[in-house]
Image 1 (cartoon, one colour):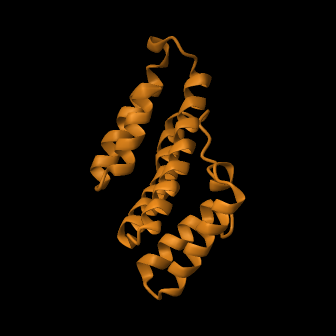
Image 2 (cartoon, one colour):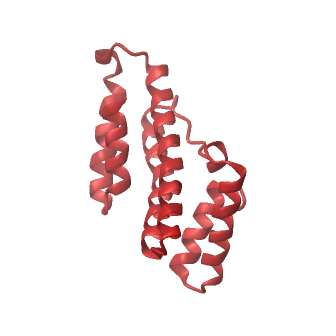
Length: 147
């Protein structure tokens, strides 16, 4: 579990696509080597999903903390990290269909947190900045509020 959590952290913090690919390959290796850890494939896939869902919640919570101190670049950076996690699930599911690509922030946030996040996303959309609008759209999709 600790190895998986560490790799998911590395994936979120990776600044470049090659770095993300490297970490994704290492996660795939852990999933493929499940027997050497004495764990079933099903349990390994469930662990991957659980760790990624937990990381979804923690990145959103980090964005809230950054926003509370007025750190808008930090807030956006944490939200961008949030949007990377479904990409990791998709990459893993391509090789291991038991891993679900269904990710929703609704599964890991309280209703109040969802409202706070959606309000922030609406502000991003109103900023008239293309990058902010794309980020807001991706977060709202994870909240199930946009297609």
